[in-house]
Image (cartoon, rainbow, N blue to C red; front, top):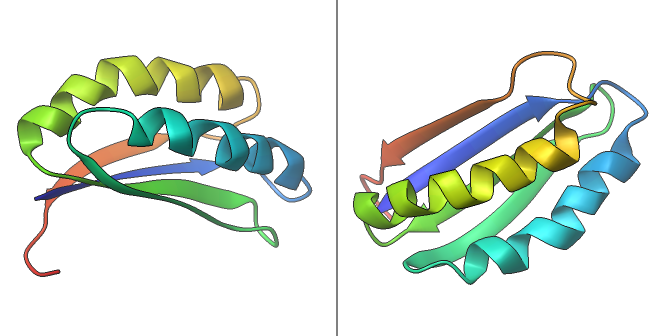
Amino acid sequence: MYARVVRFSLGPGKREIAQAVADDMPPKIAAMKGCRSVTVFGDDSDGEYGIFVLWESEADADAAAPVIGPQIHERIGGHVTADWEARLFEVLSE
């Protein structure tokens, strides 16, 4: 199993942008082959937000990235205060 962690900084006072991502993206990600779960998280005080996705396999995560990545970028691209980060990790324990 693999975990993709996407982190992005919108800055304080941008909850509505993060909430739009939280409302819109999870069903789209969950519909991708191999997706086990999607969690959107954040801290309104400093404007740091992210998405945590568990994938059945590295191949599933890699296949979803070019589909989902541009959709996330479309929603946050003009609002981020720094480059957003996406990393894939092997799950060691569940």
